[in-house]
Amino acid sequence: MKDTSLDVRKAEVSSVPTRESLVTKELQSQLPKFGPGELPVEYTPINDRVLKRGDRFGSLSFQISLSSHQHHLEYITRCNTGRLTTGTPNLYPFEFWPLPRVMSQWRFGRLNEVISIRADRIIQVRPQTDQKLAGETIVKSVAKRKGLCFGFFESTTKTAAGEICMVAEDVLSLANGCDPDKLREAVLDTNVNKVYTFVDTPSSILGSWILQMRYPWPVEKWRNNIHTDVYALSLGYERGLVEGPGIADVVYSIDETHLKDAGSFRLSWEYASPLYHGTQVVLIAEVSSNSQIRRYSVCEPPKEIPGKCRILLNLEIKQL
Image 1 (cartoon, rainbow, N blue to C red):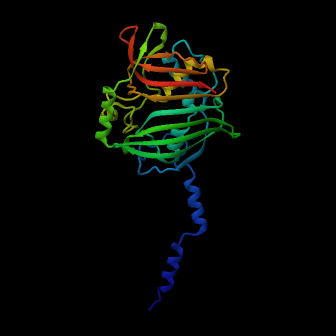
Image 2 (cartoon, one colour; image 1 turned 180 degrees about the vertical axis):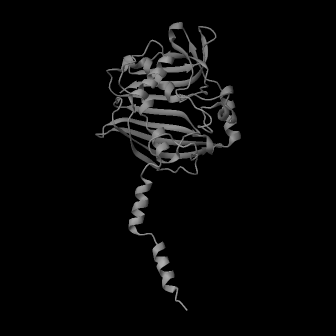
């Protein structure tokens, strides 16, 4: 009868991972999961079960093409008619903010179920189109609070030479990790606990436009996406939410002439109420005694002037 013990021992030895296989696995975990081209429809939901403090995504090399930049300029101009120098080659903060690109390519695919609710950008250099850049994102923490799930992230964009362009801190609401009922309650609370600002004169209003998407979001490709009406309604919102970081770029474009020679600056914003697609808004400037700090509110139009209007988004731009 054949002695099979030797075959068993060989099989056991072959099943033990070698140093070389462990190194290869480690290197593979450091490479982007998705290559160039359109991301697949299927994605990995982001929640407190899959994200851990200290998770690092990147570094990922990328470039913003001239055509992509021109699309962003066209979007800003639609909102900020007559105030933008459309020929500027410098990218706007939303364009070279690395988090969506890095986390999408590195592991998750489409970032369908996340909502940006607070952000802080330190802009050292505004890179130009087709410039080679590298971005990475680190998970600072993930928290559950009263049934709501939040992720806290730090991201960095650098040039190919290693010069820092941007350091960004973001708080994202991770809808997939939220208790659905608690999330709906939180959305309803924004209608009850409204925040207002007072408009003294018509000159306080710097612009008016209709909130719109920077990018079309077809539901057949972007399932469970917060920018689509179907998914937003399921979470208790009235309709799809526009891209908040894009609105921040619109506001910055209005202030751009004051900062063109300023070098570095800080751009911060925080949601006060949902930014619904199709909502008419006005931009209100807040008087400040510090010439290095400029504060703005994106609001629903006031019914009369002088009078108060509901704040949707608060922004601050500070020269460094």
